[in-house]
View 1 (cartoon, rainbow, N blue to C red):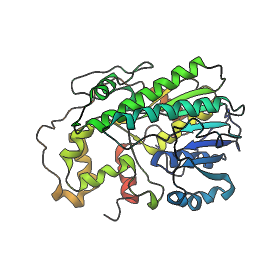
View 2 (tube, one colour):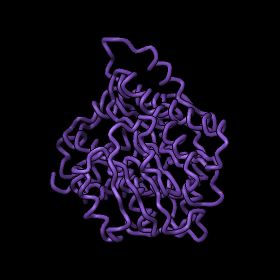
View 3 (tube, helix red, strand yellow):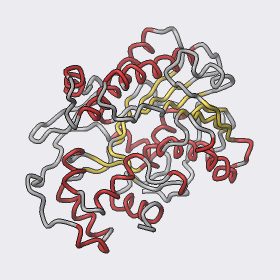
Length: 355
């Protein structure tokens, strides 16, 4: 486990310190941590965002690394063929974090834009001679969906065929899970298409992907609110235990900084080439999560149920090849995976301290 202020130890990066890196979705929960890690290491970052006004906090927050080292650019339609042509000029590496998070039940609003954005930015990058590395933020959801009693053995060719199939079959009136199925299918199809296109191209760009599971941990700035998966604890504190966890299901957690560090590994480490890095830190169950809530947020004890009907303790039994990712973290000076309790306490110190 590392402190939130730790600088990674990378002795021989493939991209020289001071190089310019393009980070898409730079103002998001994970994207902002990727920016933080890169600036801390001495790189320059060009961050793409959809709204400069909502991202002004970044200019102030990251000025501690030198105001000249962060540039924000607007990309309105990230799936457009020429969306990143200007942003890629002079760039040495790309970290593509941006995705469609609308959870729309309409598959056409989610899946085609994600695939197009991923393929288009890679193809555009392959035409820029300075670009040497490309890292995609994929997702555990791209590989599989935890199902009670199912022991998935995940690997290089694991993709969430269940979600892809369900997404294709969705019709109105859409079921409650439709949006999440479309999201999972988009991540699976987007990553798979990237590998296909990159292998068919003549580009020398090294491609790596990172597959985070449920991201938790420190939020950099109050202006971000309770972003993405970090916001789920508001519902749990409000007593909406069954509503939230029947939707998510037992799986794994990953600290947001550990996830960002693995993106840095895919971008900078010489021996990481053509890899899927499995950002799976610690398993949880319904029962363990409720126990953690009582431990970290005891002041809301009266809101927690003793048990939740139909949510007996079960754990994701999948075999996940996450040893490589932990090895990379340790090689950069991090003492293994951050524990979930630490992640949640860090969130409590930031976004949940005033609840």
